[in-house]
Length: 113
Length: 114
Image 1 (cartoon, rainbow over the protein chains, first blue to last red):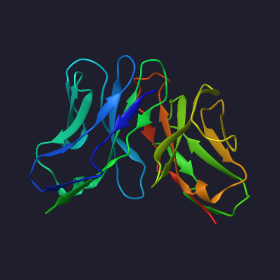
Image 2 (cartoon, chains in turn yellow, green):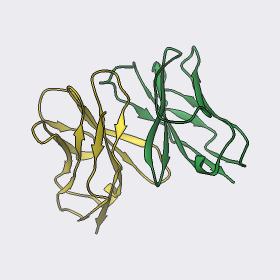
Image 3 (cartoon, rainbow over the protein chains, first blue to last red):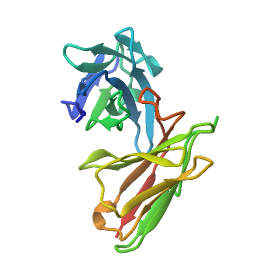
Image 4 (tube, rainbow over the protein chains, first blue to last red):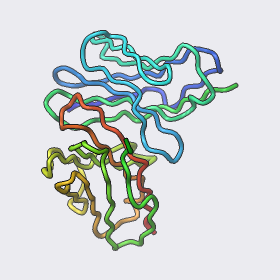
């Protein structure tokens, strides 16, 4: 069975500092990895995905993520955090056998001025 | 292009009642998935439909059911509501049913069971 772990319930960072939100996964075969963000009382917004190719994936709003096959990780990063980045972030994985998209428990990012 | 729309946005029901939620996917998208989001259990997959056929089903009791119509619109139904069914129900659509396809989410329906 596939699974995703987001080891930090909350990440605190000062505005202007770099941020990292961690994600590790377990899946049979090649993983397809996704990051989503959720603002209060809203649905999930797609940020970026890794399918194949370059291990560094660039996405929306200046976010990027690094795929590391040996560590089975897909950490979300941003060089300079904004207060408006404060939200709930979800990592998700899907295998190449057509099974469902599986989400991690989410990480709340708090960016303080 | 208009995004995924879900109706109603908010719903209050009492235990034992049934409820139907509706989802209209992005135009041209043929796959629709449903998720339940609660503070305790997080995001849990309910089911996925493609071309009116259920492709995947999550680990929910039979009280939860869904269907997809020929225009790709989808509905989910919960019968005999329980207090624990209170949640945000999210619908997502994608172009096809491929694992590489991005799922785009609607704003959700907030269901409260009293």
